[in-house]
Length: 128
Length: 268
Image 1 (cartoon, one colour):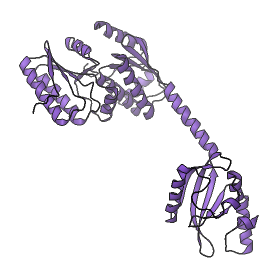
Image 2 (spheres, chains in turn green, blue; image 1 turned 90 degrees about the vertical axis):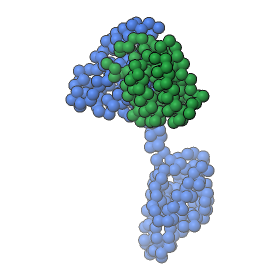
Image 3 (cartoon, helix red, strand yellow; image 1 turned 30 degrees about the vertical axis):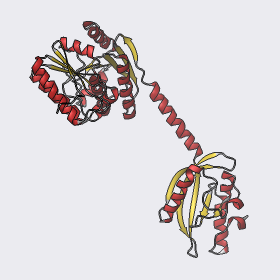
């Protein structure tokens, strides 16, 4: 069940994934699978998930992302969500899908900053 | 005059004359329509308002010359529904003979004449002026909405959005959209949302603010709530609203200080 839509890229000790524009449920669970496998293989310490192409966020996607964040955390890494669109954020808040305690950043560059300065630098309003 | 206007049967002469004089002197247009759709009576006010003479409209069926094409179908349907027994009331624009558009509140009531014949009584009330005022009010409300939420850049990566006036649901929605759009466009990491100009905060307003802050967080930005006056701080605590997840400051200056410090700790 490996999808060609997803590539997990390793940059030093950080993994990067771009979520395809219209992810279906199978793609999303496949994404989680591939991320966790790569986490183990590369012994990564950070994960950056780029969702800038995604224009609809459903509850399954939100839950999987949150859970993946928790799983990655158990494996010793930190997850940053990058590039959520304004319209997606508005819908997410209206539906109550706030991604739990997963941290966020405006772009990939800032996500690296967040990973390397782990205090209260992230956009996570609840981290402090 | 009365001969031309009065095409209804039944009642004694006195009653008919009295009823006719009521209709003739009414300032509101009145029409009586046969169930087959044919106009049987119009009063002088109708002639005055629409410019159509009784002789021109008596006996005509659908479509009515005083409705624009787009309403012709609706008014016919309303009429058919009404035939099934219901009284209806609707606001419809009427086109006068001179081409002027006037809004009418149209009340349609089924009536039975003395000899048992069914008719439909239609009463118009001219609401053109009210409609015009409503339009003005709506337009001004929109304008206020537009004017009241500027978002400006005050430092590299720092935006300021001063909020003035009461925050109701529609404004809050627009505010969230604007703020998120600005954050995403400027790629700003911090936005100061200043509520100095907000007269009072209640549970609903607080929830709107929390939602906006949460949405901004999802984008990867931090919203700092500034201008929390003593009165507002008191209300928030007394209402038991938990803003623990939000960074708040008493003044814009303090918020800006924090934002600059943040920006400088993380040079880009």
